[in-house]
Amino acid sequence: MRDIVFTRGSGWMPAVVREDGALRLTLGAGADANHEPRTFTFPIGEAHLAVIREDLARHLLLWSAVLPLCDAAGTRGRLDEDAAVALLDPVLLAPPADVDALFRRIAWERGRLVAHGADIGLLDRGQVVAAMRTATETPDGKRAQEDHAQHRRAERGTVLGPLDTALLRYTDQYLHGATIPRRTPGAVDPALLPQVMRVLATAEHACAGLRVGRDPRRGKHATDKRDWSRMETAAETAVRRAHPGLADEAVRSVSFLLCSEAADLSRNTPMDDDGHPKRRTPLSFTDDKNTEKTWRPGSNSLGATAEFWEFVAARAASDNEVFTIEDEKRGEGIQLHFYADSAARITTLREGRDGADPEYRVEYTLIDGMSGYRSLVAAFVRGGCAGLGEHGPWIPDVTEFERARRRRDAERRGR
Image 1 (cartoon, one colour):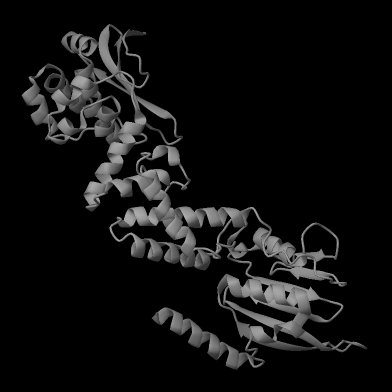
Image 2: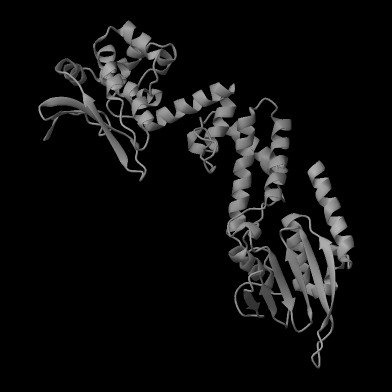
């Protein structure tokens, strides 16, 4: 039989219950292997209940001190009740100076205290009891997040100026640099917003004409890493030149914003749509798993080039990296080898008749990244193999081509 004896407004704060006649503190913390919240309890006395009931600050300090023990229990372990009980008197009943000294020796959850209104300056100076004079029952999670972000930067030795902070707030990167950036002008001090916009204008001018295309070799939503790196370098170089006093983190947040916006634009646009050139013959697309798809003029809203790349994005995988486009009527095609950054153009020299095999001319070329593949496919769709001359050199001898590929790969490794 369990009866609730005392609880505060916040449902997460430790509550006091009476279980089989004995007082116990109960709190939710952490999660089990199924990501369900875990509940921990340990015994307390009447004197502890009296302090918890009357003193919000001590209640919060106890919570902060017990949480590391809950974390140590993990997803299935038991709470170290002896260690938890050993915290009761020193946290709830000891003089403020002794509590401060205790918190200099033990692990405790700073974010919980900051969220509930602790004075951050006093916490930094080790005066935890005095810091809790401003404590509130209602938590402010964002306050704790900002404090955590500031501590992470301090540990890295990063010092932000007012404009750095404004840029990080504008790009929504102040709390966590891994979040998807977005433009949030309302989060910036109005006095600093014009300076922020000047920095953004510098980066946007440097990136004019650049794009971050899709890379269907890695799936439907993947972006071209080379395009991203090119735009990132252009933005950061221009911003550092024009605004040399900015912190690296602020500069990176600007390039991250522009690259992300460019990538989003590409994801929502058909890839390399050829605008329906006046083809009169269908094209056949195949992969390394013998899957085949035929594009026919006027068959759907996408041109042949865009349709092919959608086919690649849906089918490409680590064990499926060879894709072919074939114009059967013309007797020609190209084969893309994503695993080797290479391609082959294949031309039928003689049709197979009377049981004889057809005769083909196969020529190979090296491809420089996704942009090279895009150009090659677009050229083939427009003009067939006759339009691929400028995308060479085309090497008919396999052994010579393999030597060229090994030289290229060795040069890449040596960079």
